Length: 125
View 1 (tube, helix red, strand yellow):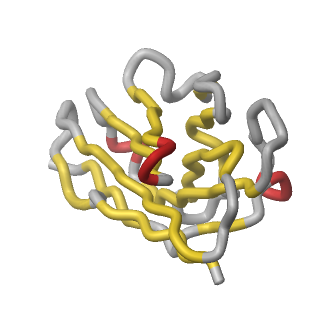
View 2 (tube, rainbow, N blue to C red):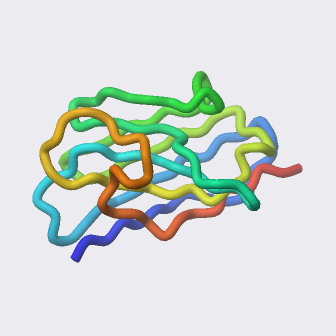
């Protein structure tokens, strides 16, 4: 059994910062791609950022220049540093992990094997 647990969400004022963390634990031999997706009320879930096993990264246009994804392979942990937050960043943020050794990024929901329960990020004054 594999557990994916996010933390770090909360309420922040516009222009503020948050750092999300996600730990993957349990019966998993290796993790290739990891990513952060988000879902705002009334909208479909969308990719925010992704990182491959070798460190290759992808950012959605909305995240470029403001968000940074990183990972600690030894800890099976992925982070999302979010700066200059805007009200439109308000959403539930989900962490995802793909098992195995396949190289490259995963950007679509169905490319991932495991998902966290989500953490709420609210940007409001």
